[in-house]
Length: 406
Ligand code: GLU
Image (cartoon, rainbow, N blue to C red; front, top):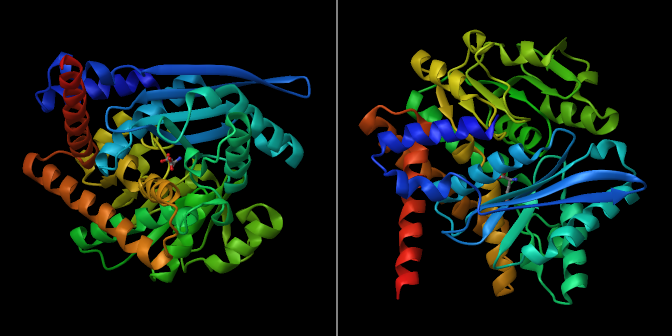
């Protein structure tokens, strides 16, 4: 995914939505790009915090630790956060952070040091009312706890709301750990109703926080998970995988490929497996113009950010595949982050029974709104979501200009 492609897509949506060049201008570039080099044991790791748009509220978005991180990627992800928070209509803007590092090669001590260094580099530009980071690819609740601690030390404040996705005993919200997957399941259930699916075979790419929890939740709802994968490869069994066993295998051996009762397949074979629901939950750009003709599914639920390229998206729409776009499908994570932020600011602790229906309401209502927009104009779900989000951002931008005139 390139930021430039996003701008092309934004232009398409601008024309469809009859927005003026001037209205869309604030969305064409980030408000601020912050960068630093984090030094650790003689190595230098490029680090970024991109603050894309805050017209609807403080910048919000995760921090990823990954060897492929670049300024262009973080910018694209920060743009998507601005759209995502507007799609589900929570009072945040969009931002994103990243460090170009392979955290799997670090010792726990180095990981802690790097996490603290990230905050040392950026603590002046974040804050509970300014910019609120969270977990993303390869960052964990423990990392959030270190970051909160470092922020509080440097600012000499108590500020649990500076970061979300913390462990529950550190001011984290219940349900946040499974929120991305759970939000995805809520919208998937709506899509299954819409398409009247009886058979529900599922293929999941990626077995991190989102993919693994999706597998677990869907298995409980009697979906048949026939294939899953992680960065080492995939496993397939047409009769369905025993997800509890797959999770155990992953925990014990670090990879799902060591699960016994299945055939080993590659990640590309996995994506091309015939199924009813395909859930890319790893990285971006895995369904492209190269493999899109071989994709044999009825629904794609984008739990990862940006797994389907713009070109592939158009082909899928022509084929009649329902793509539930990332900016809706994985918005459960940031939605429960919002709940965490509110709990921290109000010094409250909500139960899982309180949180789940609130999350479900937001996800289902957003789905229905997008479905309506899509049906009215024969737009794909991504275009419909963008139209709704951009309208909200433009309105907020206008309100802030009006304020300036007074
Ligand atoms: N990293 C997640 C995302 O891409 C969650 C962000 C958050 O909770 O702020 O949506």
